[in-house]
Length: 148
Image (cartoon, rainbow, N blue to C red; front, top):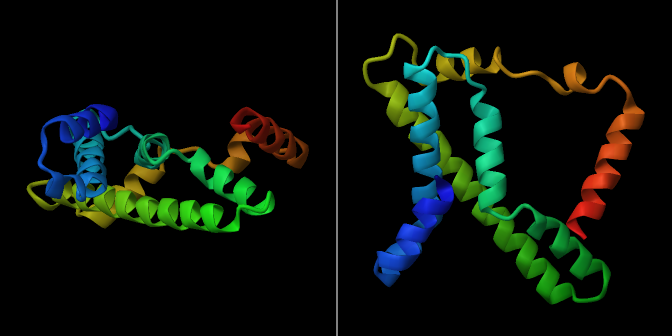
């Protein structure tokens, strides 16, 4: 969905609206995921939906690429990329929170904060997924190589 929204904005929106692309994508991600949570049984983990969609959209590998550029001596390019992605991440997350607030503000038995805690019950924690620290190191190394 985030990719389709981005494509629609890039292909048809005037130049001034493209500046708001991150806010619009984040807001629609929050709205769509929250509507699914609200009307389909309250059993989704919104954190995973938000993080997965937003990570894909803001090209989470740009963080790693920025760090690699800094380490390899391209400090100006790396720092610029790192700061830009950090700001983009914040704006996308803010949009997702706004989209969630829009859905849960009107006519739902829970307010936004209660809905956030309720959806958290549907999410497994890192301790449930990986009990051994060795696996965390292995997964980190595999993900780092996959980015390269």
